[in-house]
Image 1 (cartoon, rainbow, N blue to C red):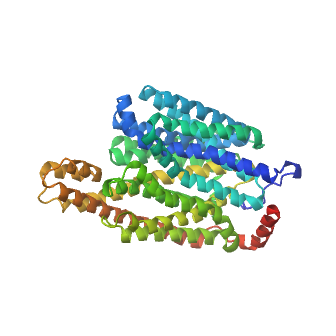
Image 2 (cartoon, rainbow, N blue to C red):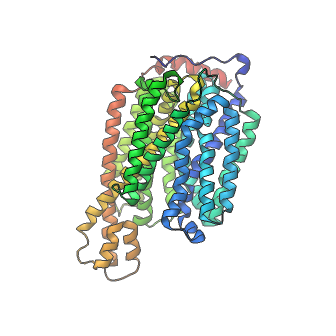
Length: 528
């Protein structure tokens, strides 16, 4: 079954002009930025929330993670609802829910109210995120769609790091509750622009909504992501982790079987994964976004515990990678028009792998930030080049009337990748650190040694209390962290190598070069 059919052509009077298209792109990008910034923003305020709410570390982590869990679980169902009810009404409703929930969270006086507000924020975000991309793919003419998707991808990839920087800045110069002011302002601006400029589009379906598929997808996503979040914290053999993983896997298998049975009436037609574009794009996003998020988590303790930097300076240190990613995301469509989608994805994956290898080879305690900067820049370029064509391959594999589902699938893949990357690379780093530090604790008092084994942050804290062994303990912990870091980086290189081989042989077809001259001519006309 071929799914690469031309998208339905819009009537000439329905096509927005260049000015309106720019406004639409700005509106959905601002809305997306609010959603992405809220994923990681609260991470910089963990201590403040624990003190103000009198909450345990577990409760604080739930306040942070419940947003992502709710967002990921509802992406597919709400993306499909948006296709049916209308993408503009769904976007407006989502922005309204999100801004109301953010205001409540900013004023919350208890952990229970904060948790409830974060769940509501996740619901609003799940209404917003897939629609932002669906608006682009259903509104922009084909010759301009790739560039617009590149902007969207850049915001989705780099927005998290930018959000963390702004959040850390607000916590440093003001109060942690100001973290909710940024998304509220962004959403209000996006809402005003959406009401004025974003056109409506909707699906006309002959089939009833796939309620069974929606419920199974929710259970599967909640089960699997909950297990990935809880495993590193409470252990992979803990009953809650194992039960959640089992429930998620059973629901995922049930979802596939149910969707194959529903065929054309399904929430997500699983037969489409036979197509190279959908399968290759999804696999690439899963791996690349997972590695990106996992590396960001690994970089923070390196900056703070090894280099001794503040949270704000640590987020600034990540900005070069984010900037390169956002820049190359916009350039990727032009490169794909010249050498093809698959070749562009392969080049991006290779550069990301090279970046990981550079960091593994040259990272050192004494060399500091400059030993990893070249690797970070290479990774940023590679991720930008690979994620934009992957997103376009996914959305291009589903018909115009299913763009909410296509966008939701793109977003769910990113969320799964992020959870996998954090869990797996974090586990590799932790195991590598524990193995390396064991042989460096000779002569260190038993109490201090036991504390140091828990992690590099614990070692830095106990070393700061002074004592004759403080210097040796600090050096041992920092060097052991670098050893664990190198293991995680090399594991990332291996994963990227597997992905490169897969895309080289099974990636989307290189159909773009034939369109290069046409695309350049269209852009030249539009620029006049």
